[in-house]
Amino acid sequence: MKEENYYQQLKGIVQPYLPEDVSVDDISPDSHFINELNINSANLVDIVLDVEDAFEITLENDDMDQMQTVNDAMVIINKKRSSK
Amino acid sequence: MDFKKIIEKLPYSKPFLFVDELSKIDSNGVTGSFCFHKDHEFYEGHFKQLPVTPGVILTECCAQIGLVCLGIFLLSEQQDSNLENLAVAFSSSEMEFYLPVYPGETVFVCSEKLYFRFNKLKCKVKMYNTSKELVCKGELAGMIKNSANGR
Image (cartoon, rainbow over all chains, first blue to last red; front, side):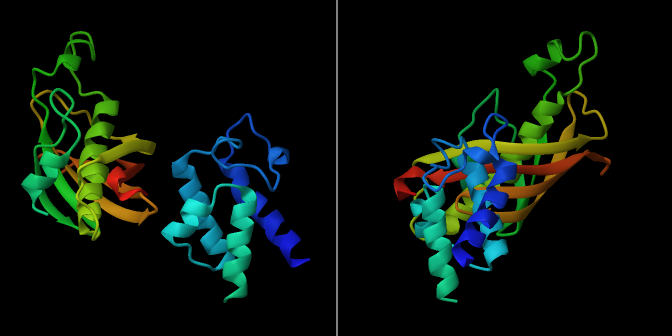
């Protein structure tokens, strides 16, 4: 399924930015990037840039503000991909 | 925004201001200089009886010129920026050092923007001495924003 593929792909993008005490298995759709996965705001920008490259989409400032959890990211990715 | 105004906007003062002058700035990069005065306090301890400018201070100098000055310029180019509530945070550095900088030396920093997205500025920086020899180089990144923007 396409959405499941996107989710796995997103997890792969997030993984290298996780701090040492957070494992990739800790990622769930509800995970908050900053508060739960302990990703700092600078690395969150890098995740967004990697997401843009991987999914061939462009995020705006508003998208960035809304992207608090993994699921928020999925919503944005699905929306941008389907309007391509 | 002119050079003088950019330096006035810097959130640093003595003894932690490491920018004297800017000579070139545009949306792709910046060039500036700083003279390491021999009366800086850190020379007393780095090293004992052999004053050499610490690498972290060279990195700081590269960051103040290469990231913060350029960041202020880039923010000033955005329409809704008054830059009254500037907030900066250093987020990463990867530097290599080639030559020592002794008390009294002037250094020149050239910074080239890699990207400025969502308030994160990442640059390639190089520092040269007055003999135009490469002192250090690397990649630096930081967050810079004007909090009055609400972003």
